[in-house]
Length: 638
Image 1 (tube, rainbow, N blue to C red):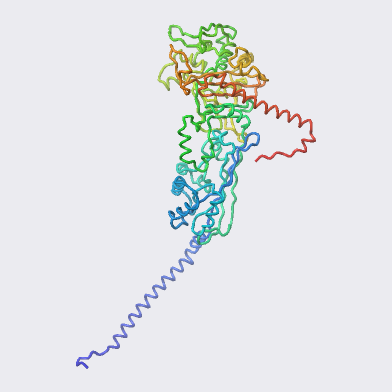
Image 2 (cartoon, one colour):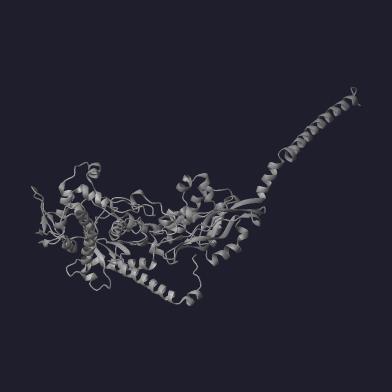
């Protein structure tokens, strides 16, 4: 034992122990206080907030897309419907490793790089949390089975049945009915908050044609449902549901038999047809050729198909009927002649001599007639029947551009028709003011001569020519053309139903008779087409230059490439004494209006009149057999 032995200080150790115990007790009290405060905050202060958040983890609100309205022609034939399609979608928030999931899916389902690119693009778009993003549409039964078997490996992957837009007529109505397509980023950015809600759960929007024009009508109203999910996000049950309201159906004036007859008559050539029901202004047919299959665009068109369509010289995506602007040529001559009669600048019975050209005083230039050597002596009737340019050079000069412009404007030239289709063009019906504003030049007498035969700066769409012809057939009553029957039209100020200037009945009769001789007189330009018709029809041929011909040259078809040859046009209405249908046709680079465009007009008119005759026959038969009529079942529309 050492001399200096340290003794234990029990009092000191006891004091240290008590101090430490106090500190620990104080620390425990503080921790307990914090827990109590936190518990109070969770269970009392923020109870409602956390209960709501907890419910949101378990209960989700899902939008229910409405069924898009259907589109029918006048006979109840379906032009746009909805078909069930199985869609492969991914909920990003429920996927652990997205790249790994995509790799597994690539082994089960066939999709190309374009599908993956579009999927990643959709992920970047504005969307709701836990909203499924489509990856592949129209899965086959085999692909659905493979995904189902591997469901345990595919957290966040869903296969849902959706209604996808389908166009049974394919290319027959592509330019008019149009198509729906994926909502893109630009469209999403333009949405208001209300619009964003309307399109929740919907992936497509009307892009062109009637699908775009009547988007609000066809879309319907979105519904919602509250669903309970498990920890993995799988739906366990539906708690509450507000069903969506389907879009309204569209019923059109189109007649599919007339439309198909027109397309077949064009026989693959580039061109357009517009047929109008004179009494109502309803569009019976509107053809633009070549066309395309709109079903390609519904779920996203492939790069190869899109490049094929946009790279074609024939411009299949271009709606020639309302966007194609062509010189109307001689098709406007009956209207110009009527204006001359109205303004009393010409006596229809006075003939002029046509040497094959027309010259203004003190001007060397010769304005040539289409017929080399001319027509000899011609009055107004023979000038319309044989399409004498020289007569109309003289008539236009006598009328003056101011009268020509005023009178032609009342037939719809140079203005929008107000048809219920987007992207219509207005053409050009020139005037002094127009030339000064657009060319920076004054009006010259030679300009007036060109306007008189539908050349120079004059441009019109096939729809405008059809409206002009319908207004002629209606003896000046101009009705706004429209396609949808069950939608109240928004009447354009310039195209309101109205009477033209007070043109005498005798003048109308004179023009009708001259146009009839175009078809039925041996010297008429379209006699070969109209000589064996079972009814009387009024018509007028036209030829529009594509390239200019020098003064000392003649038109040589063989020397020109096919796309530089003249366009062929024809307008007509029938029957002559009780007009029911007016038609305008252009065949691009067809050269002869009477030989190429007139047979198309005849086919369209004959098809329509045959349909109307059959309807009348059935109506008469039905009226004679009331018992049978009562036994018939009522038709069902959509």
